Length: 413
Ligand SMILES: Cc1ncc(COP(=O)(O)O)c(C=O)c1O
Image (tube, rainbow, N blue to C red; front, side, top):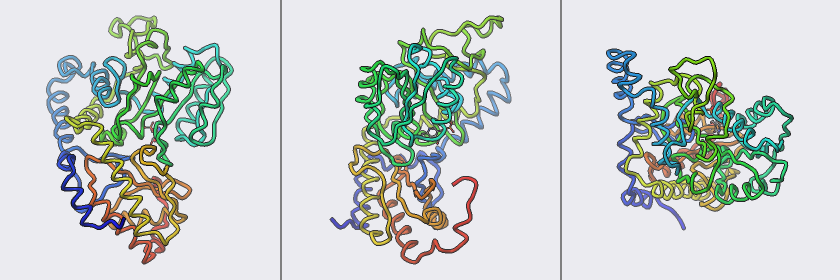
């Protein structure tokens, strides 16, 4: 089927999510396809943070730990996060970053499954996961083997009675492949393996069902699809049945049963608070709060439906408009097996992305050759996808990217 710009305009008109774009501040004329790296600014974030600074900090000062609920905020936001990722209350805290939370989750799982001595993960997962696996293994207090599996679908075949814990990316940061959380968790448990899911590329992009899938631990960030702001605190989920037995490697005072007793002896808190460590950045937590507000009243099924449609439209238009330039879509073929971004392999992908950014279409680049484009249903529309492809097609056709200024590498790609 030949897709026209008119089709895209009609899809926008019929889109039940189209007005939610007003919940964000987006520069006119910008087509921002990088919400999978850093979500855009919610319209009320600045005001909320300014308020917190002026009144809660500026006027009430230390009283705000109680009066404004600062001390409870990590858990309160955790419960709200739970509504988006299918977790009943008291199982999530918002704190630290994904990397640190991963360390805590792996340590917790290794402690529960202490008669087993292997960690398993996919080799293609986000590097911090692999680095933290090394760190957690080295600090486990016993010899831990690490097995890194190549390929997306084979990990279940590697579950054995040696494996204590599997670290799994729900959506792969490069290929966009979405793993079957329910089935993999089921097979892991059948083999006595605990699971830690990394939700960085799925939380806020699709309906996640942690409780329903009987997940043990999960972590994820809030600055991508959840619009919490640059470096916004992440979250950690631990299923209730593990709370009594999980240990915390960063056993700071916020994870203590009675932090304000200032006792010399560490006694872990009951419940998910055990996963906290030290004082949390309140201003950044405000950003998480307003980021979560942007999902108010929205069904994640609608988000997922539109995300699949936007990704498919982008893929179809790449074929229709840019079929002659040697681009290769590396995401899974079937929409149900993809997350919410599309990765396109092209040797000079870095330069193409820079040239597109100059034309107002922002994607990003992942070495060695991937152009990545994220589709965030709350603020991206179908006509914008059409226009982005026009920019991509024009850039390739006129070889705009060949200008050497586009080949200069920045620190962040
Ligand atoms: C899948 C995945 N896991 C972990 C991380 C690391 O997150 P952080 O740097 O916030 O710890 C990222 C960052 O982009 C990611 O994409």
